[in-house]
Length: 254
Image (cartoon, rainbow, N blue to C red; front, side):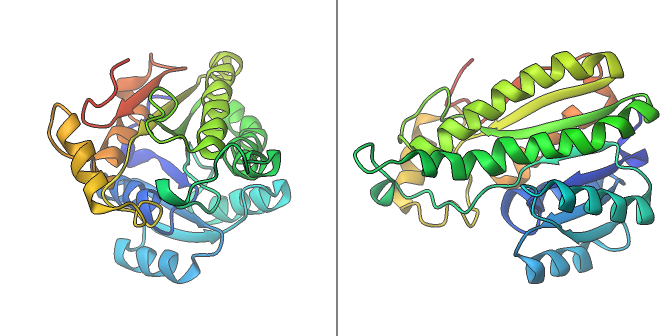
């Protein structure tokens, strides 16, 4: 699949607010039809769809529920046709506050499992529902959202980072298996974003410290990261799969 962005039907999980909303807006800006998935943020998702217009469709589903994912895709198909591109951005409830994070002495497997259920389980559910559709279409795109904390755990958010690391592994193994179907699978990993609901608890001085450490001298915005996601959905990335693009102003190299 090498269709232009204007020809695509894109589903963004966890798109009612924050980074997901910025990604949805970026695709609509480029002419794509976009399904705005949300779990609980109905008011935000409906408001965003109202702002983005007729090419945006809010659709509720918990991505950890395979039946809900199947029903969501069917709803999108009724409005726009089969999705070509999936952006898996959904995040289990989390607050990036280093002072309030769970430390190893109180960390339980349940904390990691809760994050993994959405990050990895949600991605798996999307793949299982979309695989036959991609096969019929002759290709597609899956883009997962990761974190530069895997490469540089400057703040040890153990549960969140472990789940995103597992998602990176699934991204690469899925790229291997889905490649023969013409599906590319890549990850875009951000750092601290200025500002989302999840990063709202981050002290202002932390933003300043991060900005000072980046070559660009600033903290990445959701809109800037969303633009990087566009690349992996575009025809220009048709020969790229199994990759992880870190978008953090150069804080992490490699």
